[in-house]
Length: 165
Image (cartoon, rainbow, N blue to C red):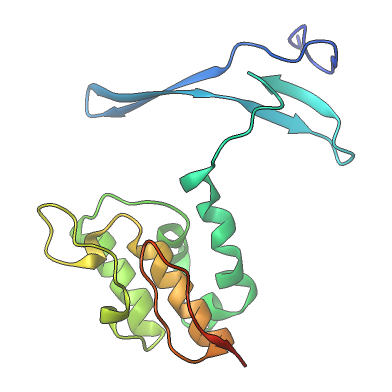
């Protein structure tokens, strides 16, 4: 196995970032420069692409971590979430009818009214369930119902407001 010359080297602080192209059909929709780091259990940098010290706002990359309370609280298991339900809690979606149905199914199985999901209706859409973050927010609401009592208020711009049990 040939490792890059910067493998394990702490002398070089930056390498060329990865470049990722996102395509929609045959058109390139966006190009992203990615700084990535692989560390061992003690935090030593083993491999990197770009700047290992680069700080950024992670936005959607955090969604799988935001779904952890949904899993660890038992909410996902209690409501028979399934693979599709977990997937829609872990990422943005494109608002298809299938995606909206899956977000609705999460709310239904948690015995939550879809009106609690107060994401905006996307342009050309008919329901907040079609918003690209509806699955993640449905997971938040289901977790909140399992763990807390009090009002469940959730929007794309606000946190869940509730009282601890």
